[in-house]
Length: 152
Image (tube, rainbow, N blue to C red; front, side, top):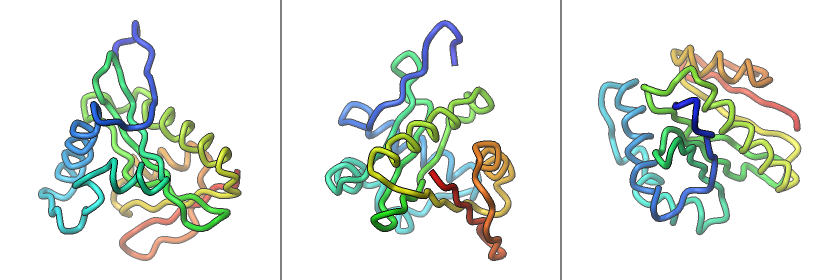
């Protein structure tokens, strides 16, 4: 991220949808070594899956380039869930994910959610550290995934 530019967090739109999809797929491929679209049908049409369903998919833009993404979906009427957190490998460690999470948390409050939950693979140590640094409390490690919660 160029320190001369301010990071912009906004809702995905037609202009950013394709790049947001590519960013998330790239992150999944980096971690798992491959990508299987059958496990990720929501990425085939982010606008349809998220926006048209009333969910929120955010993108982080640095100088109009998509450098991060994250989404808020409804778990129930009081709880939201963070999904699809991803930051471009070249831009990690610059606070982008924290800014996305902050925007997601504000949106959750606007939706009157009382709590946010999320999960990540138990070997994504950077993600685990990020969530803990943002005040999320680990509630379970099921051997594959680590589950977190945060009261708003």
